[in-house]
Length: 303
Image (cartoon, rainbow, N blue to C red; front, side):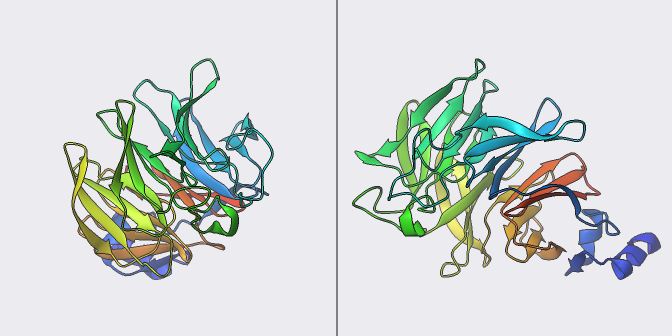
């Protein structure tokens, strides 16, 4: 490591350094920069190909759009529930995770409607799936679209009353599912609160995080022919959102900030934030960070 990076490590105020390799990932003299605030509960950060960010607000039941030029504006109203909440809902009724499908449409999780839906090019929301084996889903939380078009998503009970499983109104378990060829398949059932989900950049592995302190784990599975195989606890950590960069480094949205690990599981560092982190998005040399009520950006060194 050169002298300049060592100097940055010494003077960093917003980063906890666990391994010197973190200096090749983060701009060590950078700080989280506030870009927007006063939200209900931010989730589902996604960079739009048009040059702006979109994200969910679970409490306000909206998807917002943010750009440097226009600031923040509503992108989609009633994003997670198209009616009135009932006694079976928590206050997290809005949309959550958002991704692109292979046709360039948005697909996203709806807590209030217990569904995975698509926003087509005409601006119409189309239901993809909202039940499994005759029971409604709990509250789909995060999702990712694989190269074969499969949609994988987590289904914890955060959108349900008391944020706990209730087999009388929804699923008896909090599953991880695959939607492919109009069929929904349970691919993992060992979580009480599965939350974030993402692939490694080479599509060899899929990571699933738990957000429950009673199951402190990030599991890594091999992705083989659409199946989750050889699942192992990769990190003894909790996380809400989880992302990998192009080098395979793993970014965790955690209560203490953004925790960063190498592709081999080495703890590298943490970006300290003023509140717990719910969601992440990497675009080029910028990491976008969503805490419950505020949106930040942070400068990365790697592309």
